Length: 449
Image (cartoon, rainbow, N blue to C red; front, side):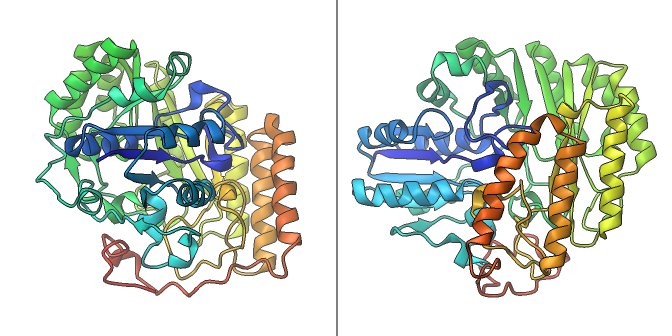
């Protein structure tokens, strides 16, 4: 069986910041999507004829020609919500140009298939693949069988990187590894705790994986793409031992309370140079993890003294935050930049985006390429105007060097809304599911529209 795995173009969210790219222009900000290694490796478990095509590099037609040249029997598109415009285009084109059976999966599908299925409509015949706990289960749909594979002992095959990216591209991408999946925190807007069963990688598997990246591609750094690196202290300690032995620089993401003196000291000793911390919002009850301004600034300074950059992520417009509180947080972000605590290129600051179906959201009828960049939900038109102003404030106050590009994207967004009879997207209401009951329920099919 011949299988092609497609990673579609991610719209205006390509890169770390300012999330307004239309193509990958700065390879140093392009992290390889962590899902691709596992999708490819699982496919290779069942067939020797598997390939990956990443539509974020090269032209659309060049990439489509690569797909068709492989003469696939099956095509699997792994789509985020931001890339679903591209997914629709690719799916329609594939249905017209190839007899291959089409499968569409990824976070866009897993989060929306049962509760917001209207968002996923395609003009092509396909099977949707929903991930629920087990990242290996999709093989049953595609290959007709599912062997007893376990995340802890499964060996990733990174040979696809050399087959997919030209040498001049590989010099600029960031290599990613995954050492654990799932999350013990239950933030209401995050897919990780809603879907993935918690699992940890065997240290020996990571040791071989890092050695391969160093030997084959000359990798001198890796990003550990775990949703929550310090989810289990013993596991984190084992992973740091492996990375230290390999002599490779690394980065990771975790929550603020785990950045203790002991952990930061150990991170510095083992070559960690940066850590993404999801602050999101200091006052929101949608966040299921403790964050305080004083502790955040203390950790910033402690880490910096050890050569580690803390890169905070902020969200404005969360459903339980009032407008004045959001303005205050944007002012705070501006203050930590002006005080030299964090450079703006280490900050992620976005408007709330309803990646997880929530009965409280009222969606705007806007292409998916704007998700994560512009407001795509509001209670009414006045609320939408406030959210739009928050976006204006973020790009004016936090990322002023992107002003021209932001205005171009903003104008396109407003033009699309102006040309429609109504700004609101028509779809069946999302069933109300209490946040504490969403774990694995969103993707199990037990609750549907």
